Length: 593
Image 1 (cartoon, rainbow, N blue to C red):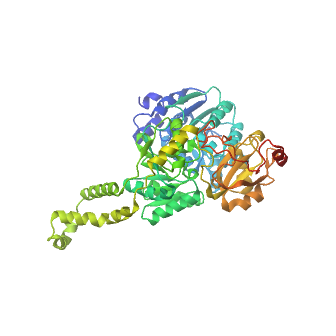
Image 2 (cartoon, helix red, strand yellow):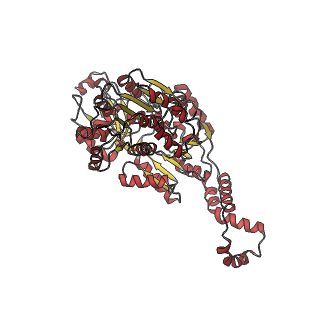
Image 3 (cartoon, rainbow, N blue to C red):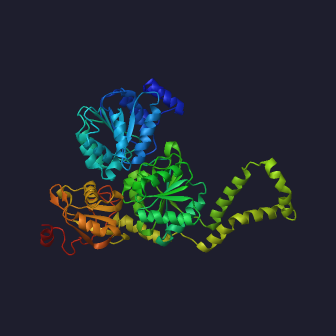
């Protein structure tokens, strides 16, 4: 099928033709005809990199009438980077239309955005927070909106934007069409469809939550102390790598990037502590391939859209299975192939089964390469580079006689040996001392049988993060609290950003969350006494102290997690944060009152 057969307006088709697009992707082929003709709601599920922006952008541009008094469409997305990408794509798709597209997002001067909106706008592309801000200032009115597009809906909910999305949709007319696009379909996304959409057509490319079939998923079993040396070997074994390295925390991201740079690799960090200007600069250098390796946190990397990423390396696995899907989806975009490489310790091996069930794909067990394998790959790369080098005969000629004189006593074989040794002695010397980094097969089998037996992590197996502190909160599901609500109230009360908040577990009557150790005093001072829907919040440092482990019963109410009935990585049976006061006991209930 061609784009012409889909029924797009001629101005849009002209732009597509100039871009060189010949055939629509599966999500585009199925979504565009429906969105062009039907006044109905729509849910499109497809992996990152499959062309979802064009799937909603092309029919949207074909249906709007530019120059109206109020905006016709609003597109809501989770991050500044994605907001800019969508608005730029729409401007390219609609270059032959007189349609105005304005992007609004945080981190920049709001006054310029207000000025742009007041000039007139047909399509607004916005992040939830900035859109709410402009609505509260009466700059944007959505009462005439005909189309609402929720792009990367699962990521927005993961980032705690549920309340903002609820508020935004309340101000839109009931006659609007809602188009929801997502890579995964957790229950929170399904709830949005149920609450704000009327009998939507749902199109799923592959199974719900299924991973991209062009991605090869590989895990490597290593010891914790060897995680960084193993990372370097994977990079050395893939000399053409252009990739993303994901870490759990900002501190770890900065440390790994610093170590790689110190060891001679072309790497830069991307995390929430960087200024917006610095993040923009790093992303610009990465897109232009001035930076070969981008070391990032999940939050900072959301919205990255670079087609040619060859590898995604998980220095640590994420807590949420949807984050793994989004991480790995940064490679193998636009029909290309890619690799998703995971570094695991023996205690983390059970997590692979949870991911496999969710993405409906199998992992391959990889082996960290040894010195000989790495040197062979690097030598082949060097030979390919040398043999493909163009010779500038005229410029080099004056230097050749002197160069030849240095080699005239040597045979061809001796010259090649010297040539190879000059480049590879550093590899050979380093890796001769490094040894085997693969964890023992015996230990792996023992852990595998344990995972099979229990279906999730056993008691006390999760190593605690010494850089984080875990807090107990006196509210839970029964009080209407959810992950997004807790994240929002913590950020509002303390001034922390969402990236400063780590793992969150919502129980029936109480909750837990992690922050970096440096924020302990601020959390205790600012959050105690804060209000959540008429409830007063009491917070204290958990009995466990350090973050990373759960002080809650194993199958806590946290959503979107690996393994078990709640798809959670699991947590051992432990005492509650109230010490010996177990939930339900008189002492515990007295404490809550």
